[in-house]
Image 1 (cartoon, rainbow, N blue to C red):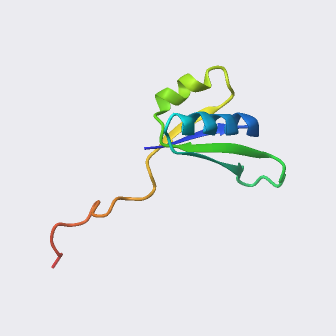
Image 2 (cartoon, rainbow, N blue to C red):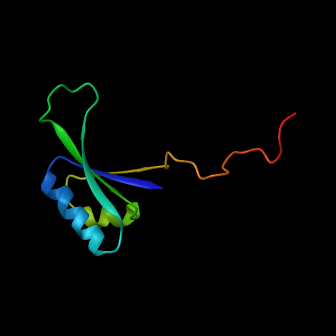
Image 3 (spheres, rainbow, N blue to C red):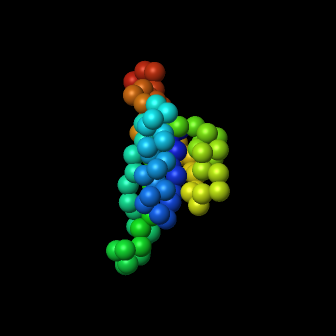
Amino acid sequence: MAVRVTFHEPDEASSLVETLTVAGYDAGVSQERFAGDDDGEEVVHVVHTDAPASELEELLGDSDGFVEESSPLVQQPGDDLPEAPRR
């Protein structure tokens, strides 16, 4: 399960990454623009982590961060492969 937390303020995203790495989770931050948005200054700061969403929601408290869970895009080797060749 992949978890993303979206912020409008870079300081909040950096603070969460620091908190998560100290707690032993993998975490990083990236900037993303909204699809079709021409304003290069209007970006959101997205924290990508392997921490559980329930723990993130507790850490965020009254922050403006938005937690999203999604399935990983990469399939594990052997997923959905037939057991024998098709004839």
